[in-house]
Image (tube, rainbow, N blue to C red; front, side):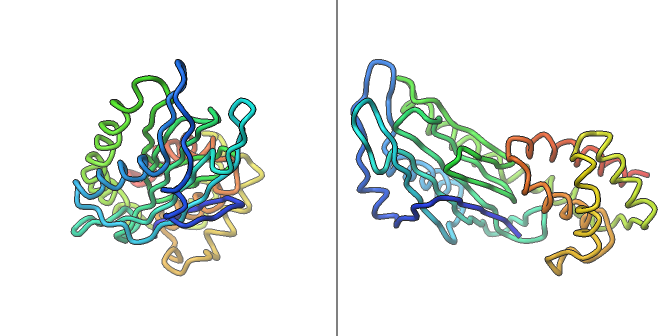
Length: 251
């Protein structure tokens, strides 16, 4: 089950994205039109035969010099799928996030994963992320980077799905669960204050598909709780979690 979170105070239609104004280039700053960026992502998805199942859009105001732009920043969330590609959670959808700015708040970026967050307060997270600063070579470099990331998803998620099957197979007892929580704290997957929350989520998951007492259920309990933290920690915490759970599965 892909989880896509778009946090913005100004949701808009796709048409409004394409109608948004792009400021002129300067010697040091080369804005990428919001609509053009979305089209580049769509082109990469289409080329690699990924379908867009749903999409949400947001625009946020900003100021460039003395000029105010009501659509200076763009935020997008999509749900995507591809025939024959099963994701790590046993489903067939991934989340994809896009963000772009004309006021130098952040670079043009794309993120893909089972859990993706795009927020107007600059939070941006996904398992795979690529992008480019708004420098003079952004137009020649951004599209190849997007194509490169999308082309890597197929094989990566095939391997990831096999790992998740191992997670589902490996059952864990109450004693092991407590031990794994302590190891998570020791390995800085999450702070000690999160231990009780993880245990509660593991024992009473909010999603029925995670009710089994196995490594897969524990992984999703941690992921659910970690989403409450600042997303800047998510990538590192997720990497550490999978390293730890991989060791658990081998014991």
